[in-house]
Image (cartoon, rainbow, N blue to C red):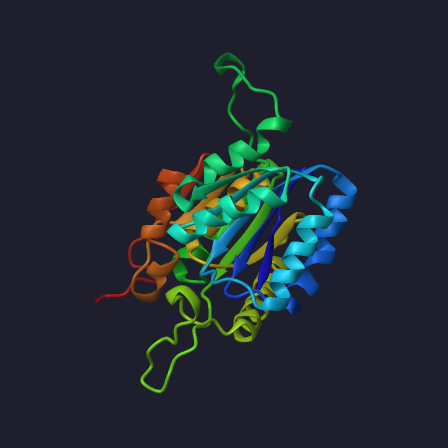
Length: 289
């Protein structure tokens, strides 16, 4: 499946390729991308590979025809992944486009964004640099007490600075298991993903998040539901939208540690925007084990 990453720049298109791509994926996604290309003319592309294991035959043909049709419209293409064979996608795609194509490891995501934006921005000297105003606040949540407490601070900040607030949740892919509860493997040793169930989880989560956003009493609230690892998803959205501040709970336990805890630490040390870690008050919503 494809998932679009909203970008705060009309000259850049970003999306994730998840699992094995099909003809139906291209039929649903390509018209949206073509509208953006037709509007902007020359664009650069960020492609994140998430548990990616190739195309079926029809999808491969769709990909080739799309690339041939818009060969002159791409300026730079950044492919972001974490597997050695994915690096070869950048090499193999070069003969089919006039665009510059580079591969970046997932930990180098910020470098990929810098490279894509380079032709469209003026370089600033250190003297010209200044503190960013908090105009866009990102609040990742897993709906835990830790996240709910941090949300109160995010709402307070958004109201005080008249900032836009985005609530974000990262959904795990629905893996297909056999009768022994072992994950079934597809191409390249990746687990097989139930894309329909994953989409259903995303839709249900979005409804829950939209309901929560509607009850905050803020004029500028958006929601974002994505698939993948929380750390990379948060970094990716923050870079794409040029977020000014990320607000997160300081840690979680048991299942909560998936989004909080180590993820908060990773975001604190990896994001280029301001990050506010909000601790949970003593005795509130904590486990005693």
